[in-house]
Structure formats: C-alpha cells, structure tokens
Length: 482
Image (tube, rainbow, N blue to C red):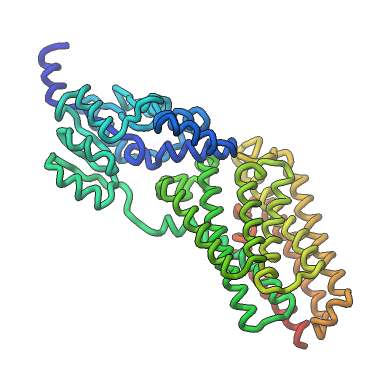
C-alpha cells in the first residue's frame, strides 16, 4: 500500500456498527429464544441450564437451537445506507456485536458491508465495558466511530472518536451528550403508540363477544348479569391479547415470509421484541387478576383457555385436523366462560351448535391460508400441517360442519325447549335459512381468494355478513317478543 493510501486510511477511522437495535430493528437474543421455543417447548429449561455458564454461553446455545431466516430480518435501511456511504468514501467498517459470532458472520455475509466481524464467542460476552476494551485494544484510543443505540453502549461511545446514536431513547441521548465526545443522533423510526395498539389486535376482541351469548340465549338481561359478562369480556380480551403477542413472537419467521403478515409490529421491527415479551407477561397478569375477581369457575375456564392457546401456539397448530378442532374449541370455551361468569347453565343445544359452527369457521380459516398459498405458488402452508392439494377436502369440511350446525339449529327450533323461551318460535326458522346462505357464501368467497386471514374479521367488515347478522338479531327478537 502506498504512503498516500496509508495516510488516507489513518485519517478515516473505522466505522464500528452494533447489530441489535442498530443495524437490525430487533434483538437476536430474543429472536433466538422465541424461535427455539417454537421448535421445542423444553427450550426455556435448556436455556436456563446454559445461562449458568454465562450469558455468552446462553447466546451460543440459543443460536444453535434457533432457526432464523437471516435474509428476512428487519434491517434498518438508514443504517445500511450510512455504512455503504462510509465504504464508498474509502472507509473501513466493522460489525461488532454482543450477539453470537455465528449470527454476526451470517448477517455480514448476507449484507456484504463489513471488513471485519466480531461477536460473542460462547465464552466472552462482547457488550458494554467488554466491547469498549476490545475496540480500544484493536483500534486504539479514539480510533473508531461507533454506531449504537442503548445504555450499554455508553462506555463504547466514551472511547470513540465520534458517537452515533440510532433510534436511541431520550434518556440514552441525554447521557450520551454528557460524555463530551463528538456525537450525532440518527432517527429512522418515529415513536408511536400505534404499533403497540396494533399488536394487541383489538379487532380480534370481536370473538370475545361470545361471552355474552349465554346471557342472551337464556334471556337473562338484567344489569348484574350484563356487568358480569362485561367483566368476563375484559378479562378474555386481556388474556387473548397476551396470547396474540406470544403467537406473533413464535411466528416471526413465518410472518416475515408472508406478504401481509410481514407488516405486523414485531415481524417488521416496529416494536422491539423485548417490549413484546413484557407486554405478554403484563397482559396475562392483568387478565388473570380480573378473572380472579369474577370467581373461581371463570378463572378455571380462563386457565383452560390459556393452556389450550399456548399448546396451540407451541405445537398443535402444526398438527393436521387437530389444529381445527382446537380453534373450534377456543370459540366454544368463550361461551362456556360466559356461563361460568354469570352462573347461567348452558344448554346442550347451544354447545352442539357452537362446536359445529365454529369448526366450520376454523376450516374456513385454513381454507383461506391454502388459497393464499396456491396463489403464491407454494406447495405447503407455512407452519401448518396442510398441503395446497388438501384444499378441496378442507372446503368440504367447512361446508359440511357448517350445514350440520344449521341442522342442530333446526332441531332446536322444533324442540320443546324453545317454547319456554320464545312466544313465536317459528320466526327462528328464518335464522336457519340465513345461516345456510351465509355459511355457503363464506366458503365461496374464500374459494375465490376474497377471505381475510380470519373469517370473523372478514365478517365484521363485509356488508352482506353484517346484514345477515342484523337479520338474525331481528328474527331472534321477533320470536321472543311477538
């Protein structure tokens, strides 16, 4: 190398870039934890054993246990552009991270932006003071520019020629400004509460309205019963949102490979995965406390619901047919919870109808996923036990179970039990006709690729479905009061 080139590289310090939260809008420690958990429910226990050997050993264990698609990770394009511009000017770059060396090497190979790559090696955790000492020893005092994002980077910035914060919190920025070094603040993400609200999936709370069904079915419309049902709805919504967050964290790789789901808050990096972990715990705790206030029977049903949803997220959603049975059961559990909260006994007719009806909706949900996969040229549904070739059978399951639910409704209308609740039970026959039409149409719309990933959400936005729901309510009320 000529003297001129040597002087040039001496004038431009190496740009050192952190990975988690800086180059990547995520944290590979949490990414690998949830990926490992999704592959093996025993993973947390194995991770705890690895942690006894140190945090670097934990990261190495999770890196080996996880399966992460490096190409689909949420990279920060502003940081990538900055690193690319630095190299274009003749500067050298290094990726130095506390994440495991295996992840760092894979990401560096994918991006092809770095001259050097250094990560935790299973023995030493390259973070905070340890990273600062490593950089000082390798590049000399103030021999590097460092891009980071958290409180742990303060010792590294202290020894840098220049500090660059990336989407750092106001508290971290204030502390970094007090270091007395040349500093620059980068912001590529605007702080917003909207991704957090989106992660709760409030539109899915529509399903929890089923807790009111025992109250309406029994015509027990007093204020106390309504208050008990409302409290049950709140408890279910809190716990359900906790479960949705956990499911999103377990499905990160699958969501990022999906054309719509990749925009979900955690998959896109809009919310740090660490925040999602604490959100799930907090919502579950609050929902459990609310359920405890209602009473032990309701708390028991909520516990069963949580166990079922957790088992579904970890394993059962990949099991052929069993996943549909569990989804149908989760709908029915909401009705059981409404009865437990209010003390209203549930009729066999209501339970039989709900099992077949929601089995149909669960099959429609899988049908929609297979139709979507067919359009994208996939042979198998991602993370599910179905092949696209199964589509005709799933469609038949959706139709047949839906029609059986209508048959149960027809038998109920003709039973002696109806006379005790309805003065004009013949009005209920119209509901059977409406349901027959609506179920058939839902399967047809799904077959044509018009269905949302969730049929309940689709029905809430579909004008014809809303009209059908309104007509069911009108004829139900007409049979009761006329």
